[in-house]
Image 1 (spheres, rainbow, N blue to C red):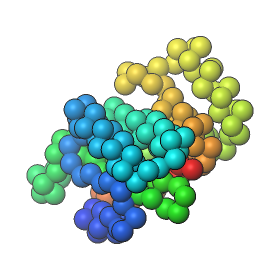
Image 2: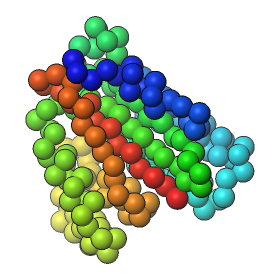
Image 3: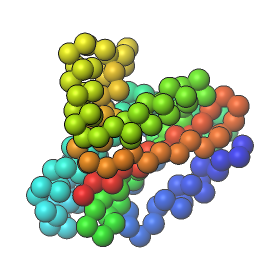
Length: 182
């Protein structure tokens, strides 16, 4: 293994973190997390417009994790759950950073990378057109979205999607997505 999951998690989990999670992602967990994050943003008296934007982007990011997660490799050795994921919400100056991490099978790497590169290349108007095109053509995957979640995140934030694929073993990558909401 060239990628150390614990080390990555420890490096990400710093003083700027408002909320973090590491474990099995479930529908119930998503509901609980969203409620907790909403409370935390309320406690720090965040601007209502920014709070709503963070909440909406977080919904998309967590749903992407939930619907597109792969069972991690060596889960017994690493003591991981079947639906293992990591996510952080961090406050950076006047913005928030949402970071997600999960294992993906190597065969999905190029498709996901190409899709993210396409999204990052497009302007806001082009993203809007692509979103409508996918909706109108009903190009949905078996998981339900046709890539709409990532497009929606890019549209809502107006920022590029930062991503990293870490080599884990010959069959898996650890995929990390970072989104800035401001």
